[in-house]
Amino acid sequence: MTPRKHYAILIRHCARSTEKKVILYNSTDELKYKAKDFIGSPLPKWNTPKKWCTQHAMEIIEATASYILDKLTLEAENLKNIQIQIITDSAQRDVDTSLALRNGMLQAAAKMDESGILFGGLQSLEYDHFLFKVFDGFCEANYTSERLASDIQNRFSTITPPEPNLNETLLLLEKLGGIGKVEKLTDMDQSLRLSSFSNYTQFEGATNIVKLFSQMVIYSRASEVDPPFLPDMSTSDLYRLFAWIHWSRSVLHVGNVRSAISGSVIAKAILEALEYGSYHVPGSVAAPYL
Image (cartoon, rainbow, N blue to C red):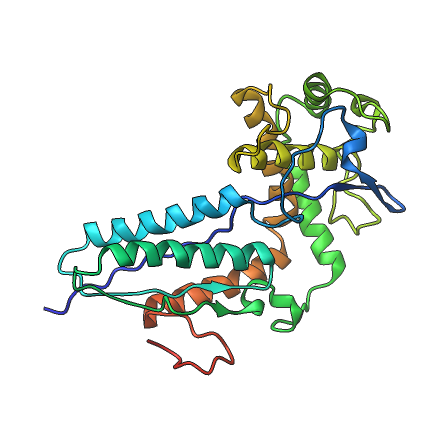
């Protein structure tokens, strides 16, 4: 009997540092401000450039990769060969995540040196920029900007904003973080609108502040930054903020033509990997399939 093949597909990147500036779109412009000017508490000390993996996040990825490889070998019977393929794009946090995944798997593989299992593919990382950024030259955007705007507006009209509402969320940030030197968060325009200046692909005003501060709250805890951003925040309040990230991304990045095209390219790559045992990176000098 031909041994049954098992596949595991992992798609992720690390917990990262955030931007230090926030963009407040309106109907005529995009206005950039220092995020620290909107709150009285210090921002997280990431000790890494913006949008890079934090040190603890890299450790988490390594441990995750080691655990996954251990689990695969424990649950599979008569396992003789594990073929691994790690693909990354050009974003620094994705390259670092791929490297941490590889290092974690190498550590796990070294512990199984006497198991007789062969591990392939851990000698190199593979680069495919267009798999993750399809409109940088791989795919032509044949849809119009009006079509994309219409898709996002339709999504906006059907996805209910989180509760508590925006005003109560801003009050929570003021209570825990204090008042910044620009203006009180609760004095800002709290209308939930898509910006016509961005062709209705970004939110206006205070929603962007909530999203950025929510990322700081969550990522600083995931990265074990000491102290975390707004250290007195409860777990229930943290999830209230998380809901705003989920909602904004659901409106802007789900259910539109741009996301559908990007998703279809990745879906095809996954199906190819399931059929052939690996994904062929276009232009690679390596053998197409393992």
